[in-house]
Image (cartoon, rainbow, N blue to C red; front, side, top):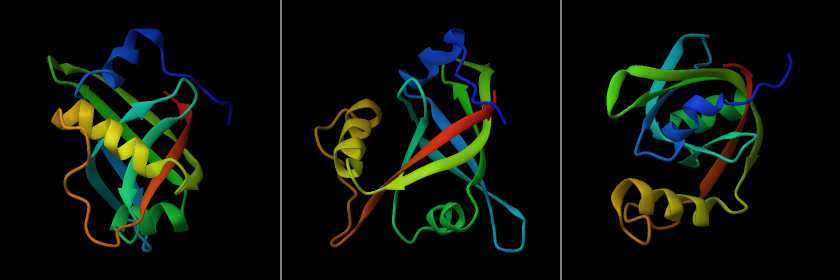
Length: 129
């Protein structure tokens, strides 16, 4: 599928404290949905998680995902993205979760990190917006 970009009229949703609802696929094919913090780098929708969580296991096994992001100021305004996780990396994931904590929690550093936790950054390539 062709790569799509987020329409400019929805880019503000990634700057606000908008929560996304990330749908991944369980091993049996059933959907699993998780609320997540979201970011957009102009090419990829970015999601951050800890290694070993269900969404991590699902995206490692099957990169097909969908995510909806709802405007916190107008719940009837949202954008939905379907695509594939094109890259999963630990590089920059710690800095990214701290950046997200600043946006969502207004703190300098992500406060819920568990001892030994490995953070991962998931780069979702939009295929349908």
